[in-house]
Image 1 (tube, helix red, strand yellow):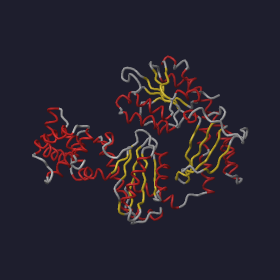
Image 2: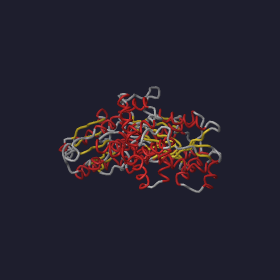
Image 3: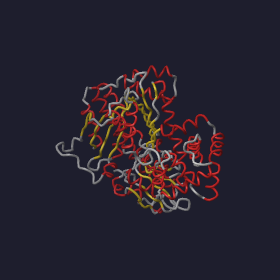
Image 4: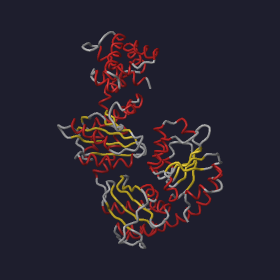
Length: 516
């Protein structure tokens, strides 16, 4: 019989912790556990297999930013972790509201342990109960995978192979391409084939009953297997059997729809671009991936807790516009190369930026579109500049203030000055240049706690448009004029129409990087 989250919260080893569910409480009754694990490491998600109750004392969360806390939640949810329990106390008096909101959105039950209990004792007691259940699941999964292999050897269809898995797990099983196109599906034999699967009470409960497994063919992500437990079926059995079936499904797909040279070369090309390999290798892989050697292209970098899931959405975005692309995703980043049409590079790049802003990205995600690369040999440069843009924006807090591209999407061209300075000037020279140009303004702000530097930066970024700058700073026009007069008196007069304008603008943007 499956061991559920609610049962564990009532276990004698955990009740002294006075546990309270703070997020996704609606699915606690449906949440089944495969294991209990404890860790204070925020980057633990890649080491988990799904179905775990994760216990943490919260020490690492105390020093983490809200963005990292939110990313932690989404990484665990993406990995299929069953629930997260955080111990609160002196160091962490309560669970941060940002984490509660993220857990609710992700459908990850979040539990506050209001008193201290020895995690080792909890894990020993509950995991001993789970061990016997896991052993039985492994035996059932092995029998199912063997039966699927026999079906494959006898030429069974994908539907027939999936029906073996459905019967063994009591789950609705669906195999789709990464783009969502259906390949095959099956329901358990005892399920009424004419009746639609009963919907879950809400989306959160449906997520708790669903297991998603990626299927790769020759290292290329080619399909997605979804198992949805029906009628009280064991989700942990579905998870184990689904993962055990991956190799058999990969063989079946290889027989029916083998990945072509183009897809394989595309994946290899992205990895080569990322590793900074020699240009001759890129020139070999580019044409094989369908990308001409002289193509104008841009690199896109997405850092998100859901980078693997976003891969399909980004590819669909580019496919709708008729732009060929190649992509690669790991647990931390999604990397994409998008080919631009000859004569329309500016328009295409602008459309890509707009499309990326419209994507529904998980909270805490950030992405950057690199500058246009002239030819496949320059692709690593575009990727490097996109990554540099993310680093510069983070240092300056730009994407947090929303002064550049909205929606967490950054345009590398908006950071051309900062990128040039990063490559050409070391920290000492940048500091000296900023002090030479803005020393009096910096001293004034420090002594009087004023904001003349920010005022000057916004005014210069607006093209010296006083009315627009006043709106961005939420100032009355008269107050804006008074600030500008003070700024001009400190920096040697109105810089408009002089060679000092460009130097001041560069200094304000470099100062933003140094102030964080």
